[in-house]
Image 1 (cartoon, helix red, strand yellow):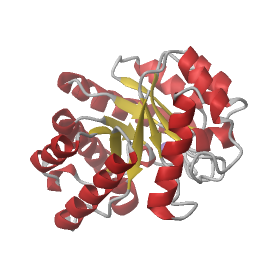
Image 2 (cartoon, protein in one colour):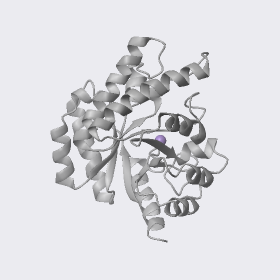
Image 3 (cartoon, protein in one colour):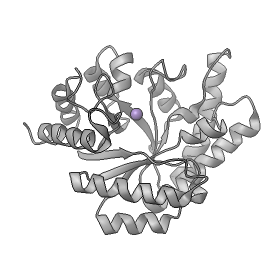
Image 4 (cartoon, helix red, strand yellow):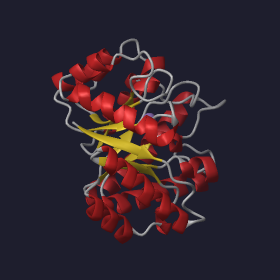
Length: 271
Ligand SMILES: [Mn+2]
């Protein structure tokens, strides 16, 4: 297991230059702390130059662990379950562009908020729309050798796919080896009966892992038992990234990122 850090970048669609500056600073900070990789959020891959990212990667000796895609939902309402067929097809197209970018710079493509919400619609109908959309993207991704992961989100952030079980059902229905599950300790702490049991149950499809403590502060500053969780991840032979996705607390981005690294690497080293 290797440690990754989610770095925040502002909206890439309108300011590619600012994005590059923020990416560079974030990568530099992650590298100096000791992380092996960074995870980035990108709204529109068309404005990203993969060559530039690749040269930063090799300059700094860092990998890209994953690419977040939720900005397209927040800013442009693109959703894989939209009632507006045009928006749904644009969401699929957008994810295919993420897949192409990922094939050049690396990283799993994350399906988070871009799933859309159920709202007052029939849940089964929404689930079918989602399944159909994800299947199309996953088939496209397979041609590029790219992996997609779906992340269960807690009930306060989405009304669709809150638990590991619900999300695994969709993944298992589509049943493609490049489509898997992303589990996040912050969401699991709210939605799962037992974080460890859910990890064990879905071991075969687990491809990515986010960590934040119970209060979404850096791991070590809340009451989630990371020793027990890491023990479970070792037991199932998880070999993906552990990606730190927490609020800049305590003490701001740099301090909390350092604290998270210190705390997690100590557990990884058996301490
Ligand atoms: Mn997450």
